[in-house]
Image (cartoon, rainbow, N blue to C red; front, side, top):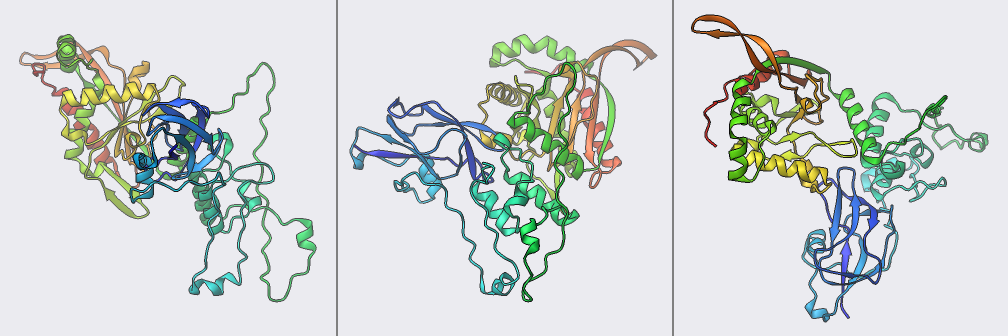
Length: 462
């Protein structure tokens, strides 16, 4: 009986490991082609791993909550065909890069990478002892191969690694956590654990470097709960969101500008065509695709809002990829991305927006559908808010919030003079990175988005 190897799939260019959340099939279960076998999670998105063939699931090589490197064998599927009839699964071909199936291997832990010093590094190695980071600490904390490699390169010992607060599943340290720690460690001098009494009691050889005294890192203050309270641990996604929001505020000096926009023509047009639009295209048209269309047009007018910053370098993005913040049933947020939004007409934007929003709520987004955004829209009006001051979605430099549309009395210019009329008004707010976007650019871009919405043609054909 032939076997097909099931490996941990690659889920994006920057993803090198994933956590097994749940096995949906047990050893001995029958599986069909494309039937989901297990659920996995990365630092970016949850996903499902389907079966590449029909057969019977063999043994599990990893358990739930294990962190597995991309390309690692995680299970085998027994098929009824001969060896010649079995072809490698697409995931195996893409992981190996040569179209060949990965060889069968016993369940072993990922091999710790060995750092081989080059000739130019030999002299330096005599002054720095290599750091050995175990796969699991004495306290039971797991460290992935990537985290251990970075720790070895940056000379972060196990005791120091234990002080890093992890945002991964179960408090595990992720790539983002350790890189953020290293950045602060190099710039501000992160505290390191003090040497143990046994270490300080030993005489220092004359040839050995003398370690400088360091301050131990302070443990976080314990939560003091009194009275009638409930203590709730953040889930994995909320921890990632919290870390990302704090990082954004620390990275970018935020400035927010506001405009009030008269969208009466837009509202009246939508009310007039929404039934016909749904009958013609099978899609409900909301305000979101109309906002995205206006933003895409304004980005073409002001391309320097569609950038990112890397050190002292500005990277201008040629693609207009607009992310839209979507609320999940759990209360968390996710930002699916409308790729090349400036090339889509209103019908295409409506279909894309509805599809991404529906699959976001069902936790069925693909990793590539939440990556490569260049600008973000968040619709706070959905919750009845009239305006907001959103936090920039790094590494972008701007985010726009659309407030609730409300009927209000307003002064309207007519051929017979100024008049008071009831109009549909809304606030738009733009938060931008003041390192590279000044008030002139940010304010002009925001006003241009408002102008496109106000100039919406009430007789537009669908």
